[in-house]
Amino acid sequence: MLQAASSWSNHAFNQVPDSQNRIHSDDMAEAYGYTGALVPGVTVSAYLIHPAVVAWGADWLSRGHAHVTIKSPLYDHGRFDVVAGPDADGYSAELRSEDRLCAVAEVSLPAAPPPAPLRRGDPLLADGHKPPAATRAHFEALRENGCAAAPFRWSAEHPMATYLREADALPALLRTDAAAGSGYANAAFLLGCGNWHFASVAQMNPWIHLETRSWNYAPLLLGTPLVSEMTVVDLFERKGHEFADCRFHLFRADTDECVFVNEQRAIYRMRQV
Image (cartoon, rainbow, N blue to C red):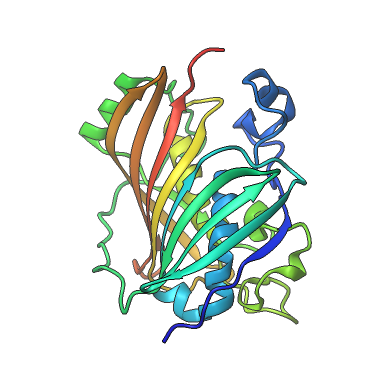
């Protein structure tokens, strides 16, 4: 029987206030009707996945699955509460802040993840690559012709090395200080690789991360070089917003081993305000 996942609380942390996606800054977020800078969706997801790491440890990092949907903004410094309740093979959870439902998740620990994808060998983005504007036509071309791959490296210096201001509050497996933790990559970084890859193929500002379905395949140690391969799955418009559904396969660059799969939905063009 799985160890039960526990509810928990903390204060939200916007790790990237200077991001090129200015929705994480006060000025642009307020221009779009929000009350302040939005905490990244991948960070919100990490808060909902945190109970899985605490309860299941390395097993979660090796085969865990999560489906997270963002419902409303989480603001920097705001207190949040994650309430987790058991279900058949994991837990369901809600994240609330200031009496608002900000996100929901279904998190599970299957006996094994789905068969791991194989690396296609897509060419890497060129150094200094400057993407064209994010238009429906551009994303249609990416869906038809494929996307360049993007390189990453898991590092203690990365902005997503922690999803809490007090890094020593992370589960021990995720702490990057050598004396205290194992330094494995956290969900904010792993999901963030999809975000950064998405933002590297089209110029968009602002844009909104909305939903992910992710699968872990192997714990990721500090210093590991990575390659992300991207597929545009679907494009659609709803209420004046332009959406893209994309799939990201994250591989170790040195062995081609798949470590993480993420299916992501995002608004790449927000309606005018």
